[in-house]
Structures are given as C-alpha cells and as structure tokens.
Length: 66
Image (cartoon, rainbow, N blue to C red):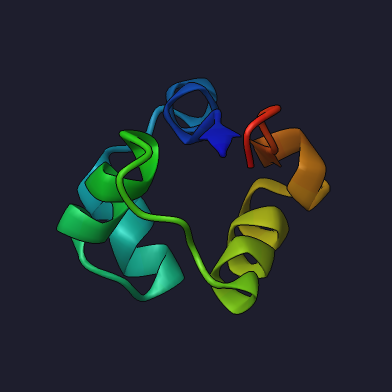
C-alpha cells in the first residue's frame, strides 16, 4: 500500500509529532506508516481522512501486489 501522508503533512505544514498528537498515535507510528512499514487500521485511516478532509483513497492507495 502506498500513501501520501508526507505530502499532506507538508501541505498543512505540520510535523510528524504534530500529526501524531492530533490523530492519537506515536510519532514513530506516523513514521512507519509514511515509510510503508506499517499498514494502518481502518479506524486510523478514517482518522487521517477526517483530519486531512480527504477521502481515504486520496491518502492511501493499493498497489498491484496488494
């Protein structure tokens, strides 16, 4: 799964730490998601969607091998 969390954070000019506090996870979790090492739960993906005011599929997208 690919994501554009880093791009969305840059648009809003917020750090991983800022985002982690708003979403309710650790900064390390944000980092792992951005690097594609961790796939967020549905609930967490929906929290990102609400925070960035974008549909989930504009933040996360499946790859051919997913």
